[in-house]
Length: 553
Image (cartoon, rainbow, N blue to C red):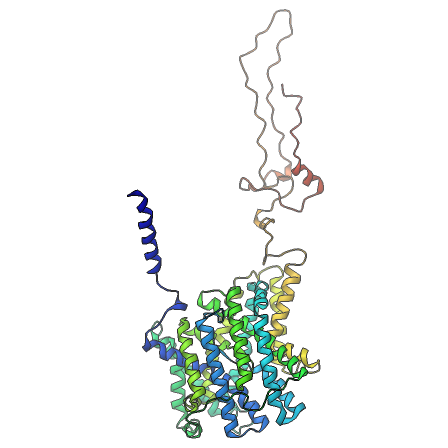
């Protein structure tokens, strides 16, 4: 019977492990909570997902049908990429609540291609380059993920903070109306609508704190803001009447792909920028969800992003990237289940196949999105600040690293034309505040914290903490115990005819030097730190026995 006892113990242990509650990322919510949380993610990424196709389509002068096809492809590819990110099958996907969508970084290179190749040949060249860039991302994913070791808290905190800060100007544009050429752009009515949406969102978040409705405060705030916009004439049902009922994206609908070397080189640069921004968003999401991003996580995420980008080159979408605003929604709502975002991706796929569903989200006016964006864009910056709190900024080089990184990251945000006079590839890289800040943070962290002497950010395991540092000659350190006195033995007797006996003498250690008399005590076992004088170093390596004292017997 005794040999079977371990088997019963193992079975009990397995049952206990199996019955443990799942991680919040793997939790499956009930439908009544799952659907509103997913729709909140759809509403949060709608504006960022539709803006690049609309801007590019307007510049190309596309017809209504062509523009609808461009938007349908963007929704479909974003939905497929988001589902791949959250499900995580066959090594593709992060298995985190991460969304994918069209990167805004493609707008400027695409418009430059339009100016160079004309309207007729621009989209085939852009989609051919997008296809190549997606394949490059798939190939580089295993190597690119290893760069995460260069993202300690001082670096990742800077990058995540810049991601949130760089999104706040987008919220300001939305709050003023979204279209800079519109006559009511920045009008008091638009600003009031954005402020009302923000106030309602904050009120719901405060009054319903701890309840599920408080976690979807952004969605409820946008619904309330849209209802307020109806009497102001800012919202209507026109998008529903203009959208087709069903549309299936056709591969290479805008012509056979063209592979132009200069366009491909620019697309690869944009892809690298998007990979860097996605890695930063993934690091932020790992901090928010309590499941830090590892090498395997980043590899799977980049593979899903490369797959979505390559598929976009076929169906008529653009370079894919992770959406940081949805990371802010996860931080704000504290709903960390990846299956919520899986449903969000499924809804995006339906919106790509049934454009009338996408028009439902289009009913939300831009000022309403701007008011809500202030909340979840700022949440990303807060996640970055929390990460920076883990780095030692009080002394040493980390404070300098953060200050210089934030400066370089804010230059293109505060002054968008700061790098316009530089060559186009360099301007594309540095024109993104996130990418510029990321490069500067990694470089400064290496130069200041790893090259040469280290700092408190990455302490050398062989060094001793500052509070344990003592002076060289035993100041405040442990002193050797005094030599023991010999046993006095029996008293000596005088012998006739001989001199009187000399009594035994005990050794008395010398008194400490005056400047060492009041040195503070240090715990036993503390050793001398470096650097030492070479003679001290040799004395420590080859200690000599104490010299004989003449007074000792």
